[in-house]
Each structure stands twice: as C-alpha cells, then as structure tokens.
Length: 226
Length: 226
DNA sequence: CACTGTGAATACCTTCACAGCA
DNA sequence: TGCTGTGAAGGTATTCACAGTG
Image 1 (cartoon, each protein chain N blue to C red):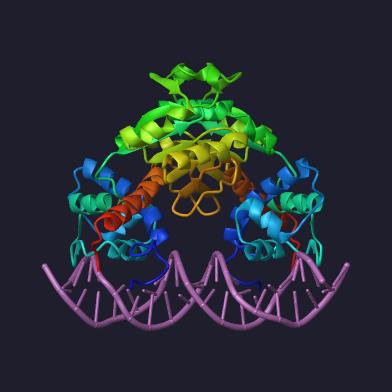
Image 2: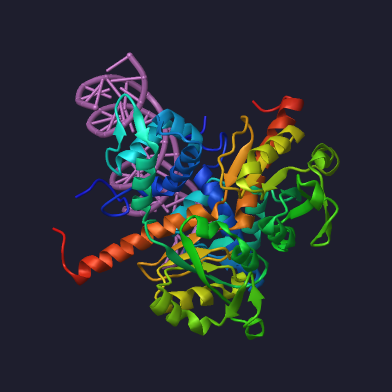
C-alpha cells in the first residue's frame, strides 16, 4: 500500500535513524527560546541538507507552515510521538565489565526517556555487588523483569564470547530490541531488532580514511600517479 | 574513471564499513585453524549475504579461487592492507568522564592495531590524575602529540557542550579523523572525517521498532485496521 | 513572498543470475 | 563440478526544482 520497503507501513529506515538528531536539535532550540524554525536552519543544526530534512518530515505528515517554517514545540512533539517516546522504555544492561559499568553510570538514558531497570551479569561472583547504586542481578531475573517491569530493550556489554548467550536469554525472556556493544554478529529470530555499536569497527573505518589522507599527502609531495 | 561516488578512486563507503566485520570473522576462523572458506560461509559468519560479500571483496581485487573459496590468511592480510591496518594508529581520548575512563580502560584498542597515546581533558583539576595507568594531560599537549607521536585519530568523550571545542582543538593540531561519542553535530573543515556514536540515538531507534512491535501486538489482539 | 511539501531525476546500494575458471 | 567475479536488474535513498500555499 505504501511506497517502498520502508519500516512496513511507515517511515523509511534511513529517515527513522535521523529523527533522533532532529529531536535533539529541536530540544536545543527550544532551550534557547526559539519558537519557530525553517527547514534550512533546522537542517543546519542537525547536520543534514534542508531537502532531506523536509523529505524526512513529510513522512510524518504536514507539520510545517509554508512561508514560515516549523513550530519548534509542535514538531518536537510529533517526532517524539513518531519514535514512540511518549512512554518510558525500560532497559536492562547485561555485562558488568568496564563498559557495562560506564553505561550503568551514564545519566543520559533517563534524560531521554529510558529507564535502566536492572544491571545483570552471568558471573555469580559479581552478584549483589553495587554498581552506580544498583545491585548486580543474575540472568535468571530476566523473565521476571519482562513480566513485572515491562523490560523491552536489552543492552549487551559482555565480552564477545558471551554475547550470543546473553542475547539468547534476552530474547527467550521476551525482549525484542537489542543494542549490542560486543564485537560479534548476533543471530536472532524474526521480529527481534539488533543494533550494533562497535568501537573497533569505527576506528578501523577511520583508519581507512586516515590512510587515504596519508596517501594523498604522499602523492602531492612527490607528484606521481597518472 | 571508476564507477560511482565511492571513496574516490576506490571502495564504496558501504563496503568499507563492512570490511572490519569480514576481518573479524576471518580472524576468528583463523583462530579455529580454518584454512579456506567459501563466500557463503564467510558471509554467514559476518552476517551478510554471500552476493554482497563477493561484491565487496571484488573491490579489493581477485583474491579467491573459483571452485574453492578464499584463503583465510591471505584474505585477512588483503583486508588489513586495504583498511590501512598494517601500521599502528595513535589515538587520543579527549574527556575523562565516565565514558572516557571506560574507553581508556578498554583493552580492545591495542588488539586491533590502535595505540592510545594520550588521555586529555580540558578541566585543570583532572590534570595529572591517573586513569588506567596513564596521566590525564592538558589539551595544549595536542600539537606536540601530533608532531611527536603521529597522533592521527581523536576520540571525543566530552559532554556535548564541550564537544565542538574539543574537535576544533584536535583539528587545529592536525588530526583528520574523529570518533565522536558526544550527542552533538560537529562542524569540521573538508578533509576531516567524523564518525558519530550516540547511545541515545541508538536507543531511540530501537524504541521506534519496539513501538511497532507493541502496535502490531495490539492490532492482532483486537483485530482492527483495514 | 518565503518557505514547505513533493513529483521527477539522479545517485547509490543490493540482489540476481550466470559466464568463466581452477 | 563448485564456487568466484561481475554485468544487469531491481530497490532504496538523496537531491533537484518547482508548484502550492499561508
């Protein structure tokens, strides 16, 4: 019925991935007391082109005013609704190593509508230990967390060797959204969404570009290449 | 001369972003003593389709053997070279808050060819403090790090309010590659590459999908919608 | 009249399907 | 024979450019 292999009945994946950026820019503008903003201005603040911003927003509906721009509060509310951020999303962090502890201590989740409801680890020796004011709990608590707290999102911060197991237990408990920091490919059944964040991968991509810069510099220095 | 808006004379950006995943899979296979691998097997291990894997690898050259597959060691070496990982890349981490400290303690950088040569912070009160066995150094050390250590990549782990300033100082010192963890859009001159990693953005994208799941479940329960 | 919303054009990416080679 | 490498096809995403409108 709709247009393309979007998120089925809805917004293209690429657009969805940019909405949080728009929301952040709008929130900043609102904080500065800005009432109305043009696509050009908002696009600048979000680091995209104005045409792309308008196309992205057109998927949500017509919330702008021709000749004027967008009402900052209104648009922020619409994007918030589109992303499903009108409710709080309970999150559990699995793996209490360095990264897990840093994530547990990160205060930014709450600010953006996510509530860390539990810190988990498969290592019995860590159980009960206090991390950022919360006790480390066993993986066996997962089903209860889904049932009682509505746990919906799992963050995997385990070593890569334990990532698939952590993922399996999250999925078995009913979690459908996973944010994976482990450098591993996770196999999940249909209907479960995994997003990967990997520091090494990012650095390696930067290395590729750094290498190009180095190569270009060398070429300029000693004018070679046809 | 070549095909498209690739990385100009080379590999499409989308392919480059997948190469680290292939390299990781190959390293794992090599660790298990595997000598040769087919595109199908390697694609599975990396979580992509075999057609995509072959197309990606074709940008590097012809390193497979028809009817057989790829030599694991050989292909790993080729990808390593393509990514520019035959040398070590010096990295500096800016911002010694929770996240910066976790990154400083992360031992995975060294394993993949990156060397953390300095930990920096703009806050004078932190100077000299020991973090993961290294002293926190002032931002004014940056030019020296580029000149003496060949610093090439900066990791920004500051609060968003300080991110642009940190970035400006990195760029002014000569750094051309930046990995930004702050939830902010960074403005940089041409030739500087920025990659963004933002936890909140990732969670918000997952919230969008979680919402869809919730909506679908509700629709199934009480059969509505045309 | 300035700015949005959007078809049309373009660029890019992925998948298909098979020719060609060890 | 079995698997790679790759043109061609099919999708998706982005940009262009302008008609429409408060």
